[in-house]
Length: 400
Ligand SMILES: C[S@@+](CC[C@H](N)C(=O)[O-])C[C@H]1O[C@@H](n2cnc3c(N)ncnc32)[C@H](O)[C@@H]1O
Image (cartoon, rainbow, N blue to C red; front, side, top):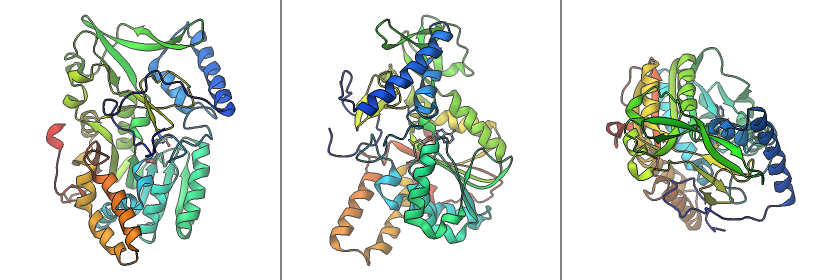
């Protein structure tokens, strides 16, 4: 096992653990067996095959058993991966600077966070600007994670706990700042491949021995934008992000006045569908190992894919939102003042503590860690100000 916690990098950037066999605990084995039975039952009822997108949905979100719905520890050293808020509080503290700036532009002082994970980002934002906002809403699909979020926020940002509201659904209209860190990458995607002149959707079935396998699902896939799949060569396989587009359209419908800040790993379309990635960007994580085979151990494996940021931007613009900026995480954090925040903290820290903090910042901004692969996109409705602190330099919109 790696000694360093893993961020969910690109599948080509770490050696893939293709055929790795892990020793599962008794509880893990029971959990994955139960979820496998549920998925197999659905496959059988559907005539022996379900679309990959449905498999991913069941594997990640099936109530009580799916990866994000079950109680197994997934975040941090003892789990499968870490995210920026878990690397350092400076991530949330710096994001809070951008949130405060748009509130000063006149956006209603309310935050809505999607998929709040272990609650660390919420706690860090509340500790930075809790007194400036009226409420901090969280929309989380997993009951287990809601319990974890309550525990973290109570422990780290207890003074602001009463400002936190857990929502079951999006309000009809929302005024304020919407944030989502590493949420788009966890939304189920379609798997497609080119065969001759047509694009096929890939499905999931299982063998007589009970192993999940890929199978051709539908040979009449109609993309809403043929510009993408037209460039695929015979055999090219990749993901299609229908759920991401639907998510952005929904946000655009609900956002009355305010801002959406999206943070995730991904690329502009040309880079995303580069010929080099002829097997796509889908990958799994388990105990800090990167997996190529995402069909093993349903419920125990985090399944994720990179974000097609071009698709996010065009969907948002078509839905009437303004694209404010698109930069990598390093540029965003540096522009928004992570160094200043660090400087302010320095006077209260010992040398050892300061070195620890510097290492954390290094992980967030280094090009070979989270600085370059992760991007930040700002979308808005009804905001006239164009000069936003996080997007002042390093614009990457030309890559979209
Ligand atoms: C990789 S985790 C990231 C957690 C956290 N944001 C962080 O950065 O540590 C992905 C999260 O997105 C959530 N998620 C995915 N789609 C969602 C949706 N449509 N609404 C709310 N949460 C969603 C999952 O339940 C999960 O909590």
